[in-house]
Image (cartoon, rainbow, N blue to C red; front, top):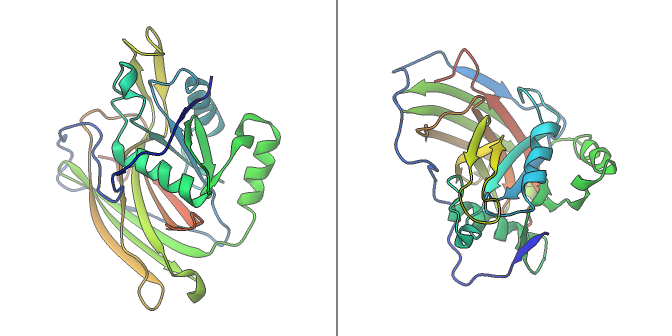
Length: 271
């Protein structure tokens, strides 16, 4: 069944960066930088809110994996799986979960004027997207990527020791859309799995793709609509098979995503 959680008092701010797995691994001291630049059309941001402690979440996890396969460079949509932490109380602590991700889901709830959060939940361009369960949902997703982008983004990434040095640049095109906007950066990875020992999924081996390992909100636009952010993304101790840096521009209050960009850390700039 779909599990539901009500409003929480004193929710934590999501703006703090989160390293989901403790410790860092030593990558090369320096490597070749790689880069990406957004295009004229919007690239929809697809967020899945999930948990290893939720019995109804594995089908949604599989949907995300099978719908968004392979290298996401130049993809028509960018997937991110945010593992929330409110189902940890059922006896299994999701090692990919974080309070910051739960808070992001509550922010989406408020932007959508909803009364509760639930898992699994899919959010597209900041809006609740229950259509993911239906074939017709893919047409709606395609339509979300057929409109002009409202922001421009460029990314550069270079491996450092224990981290990825990222240069994120963005510009909001219209002055009227610059209020309440921020630039966000995430590090996601695929090819991860957990053997669940307790809780609703006890005895299952769950596979995960596009899992957010680090996430943080950055600067707001200046008077010209520009945002510049140099940030080091810590590498988690457990590496997956397809690390990707994702940047997006979003109105934090209304929830609208103005543009998103993915930069896979492939051969030239992988740690």
